[in-house]
Image (cartoon, rainbow, N blue to C red; front, side):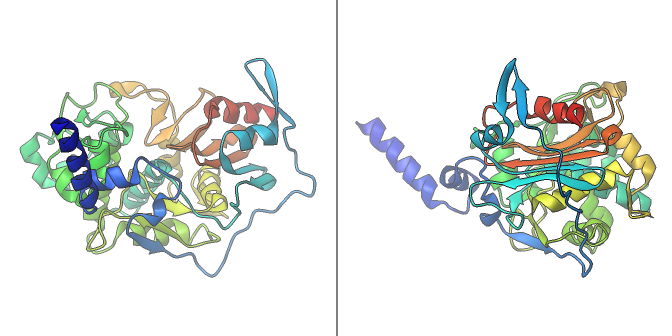
Length: 367
């Protein structure tokens, strides 16, 4: 009885500590599609010109999905697997656009880890702008305090390829783990300063969000007096003529750092424009936004120096045929198949029971 009482008291204490990591974890309880409402954020404004994809008068829409030799009606399958938005864009034209559960084109959905791919684009822009010299620079050029933790050999490319050897607990179910610290914590700079290594860099791929958050601090230091959100607005949101403003969640409201491993809050059509930029090799309506070389390097297969063939510069490569995608927890996807001139965006409350990698790739075959 005494033990049970102690557990109850401990839980109540944690719940009252709304400002601390564990308390926020207990209250919020895992990632949710409404998480953009829970954290402070910086606004990212669009410009006066808005690009809108033309809509096909009679779109080419898959009627059925064949999954494990069983046929499912396309729209019913999407709905049953907790999809809230699904776009298919072929030849720069919307072939299919559908929303569910009171969501529409103006509904905000957090990117979760799709933000990793966008962070990568901003690193490419910073190199184009000569704010960062190259991916071969040691990150301690920007975060010298990590020298005391043995990070002198870690390069920007190691972070991009997830081959840094960073010690990081990626579990989303452990309130005391690193993922909870980064997602629910209120001081990312301090958390980064405590990071340790578990192995030598350039030896093995290990997908952990800590890599991308350190990239975010590198970018912030390179930008000096400009926030990462302001740079996103300048380099992507306005040039890509986004339809809506967006926001980027922060660790705290006072001089906060953007959660670059996650948490860009935007709409489905605007996420699709990120795909369009890379489909067109970094060019937007004949203007080069990020170098073609960066796009190629970011989406090519590479198994050197510990890199995995299916992951390159914060983009996933689902097959060996040239397609690539940004992916976030709960099943957020920007899928691009350049050979088919195809972009697919799927946003959802969770993954459902679907294997979205296979489904997205199969849509490439359908077009």
